[in-house]
Image (cartoon, rainbow, N blue to C red; front, side):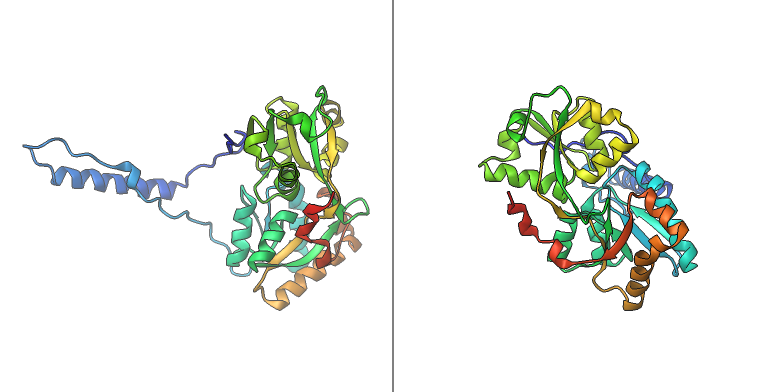
Length: 318
């Protein structure tokens, strides 16, 4: 049976104090009401806590002139903040406006924010863009160029001592997916299984969702999973920073090339805002501060987007 577990690191967040206070008041009201309705000649009343409706999450106030930039959880939150903060500062310097970095656990949450117009621009994965384009909620803005390329691959990786040389070698093993909307971390390996007449439930002994590519890599290195599907750019970048990762894991399969994870904007963004953002992104590599900020996120430059690069039928490639 397939299970969608996550690794424990960073998996939970603290409930805001205001929500906790309101929930306590709601419980006290229930207890008080139960005491008023009690009939001493009958059995003790039962208080049903499983029927409570959670209060809506409160959001921090954001200045009306702020620009909100969402980053999908391609890498874990700590890594995202460290990598993207210099670029956020660069955008603040260029626009003179407050730039708010917005993070969410799943790709779907970022897609939902784009659909609601909660953010002005977002770094999303290729699979999430396919879904957003299908839903009519987002448009391409620019695409990053990494190592001279505008494409990337899905990699199947395994521990260095594994005898697996491809997907078949992972049969009846534990496998780590990244996110249900991740092309490299879920959609492509799923298509490989489907072409073989298999499904995750029938092929693997167990599956987990890690919700970031670096966590998937760690799950393989630490023996939590026997294999994982990860973004080639993330994997190769982490090996450059820490060669030990390459010694403790190995690539057992490479997918065809796909359009690189793009930068998008909401469908109904103001044209002048989209034009400003596009100009800033396209010119960033020409500015010394911008070039340094791009290096922190592993990007050489941003270039004009080409819709033809993002064909979901590319999953049928061999």
